Image (cartoon, rainbow, N blue to C red):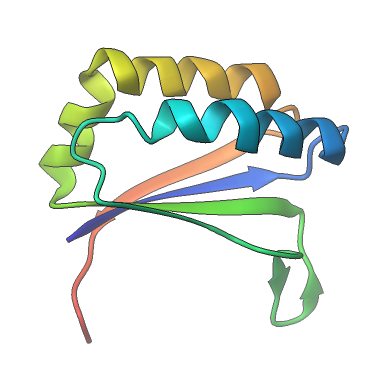
Length: 102
């Protein structure tokens, strides 16, 4: 399995971010080809030392890194990337990696 980890930094307006994210972005992102599972954080995103500058974390599951790369080359993937620019006013960090049980 592979993961796409999307870490959204605290936006200028959290209520506006949440409304757009859940009503518009999630339905767009769920159309990405090869997506196996879509998880999001619930409640505050904190570090072991306390608060963080992140508002929401999304973890998208795919078969492998190649599937992630193909997914984001698709029209649906490009639409999801373009949409992020419309609501992620605090910035976003994106990571992709293969995963395994340890």
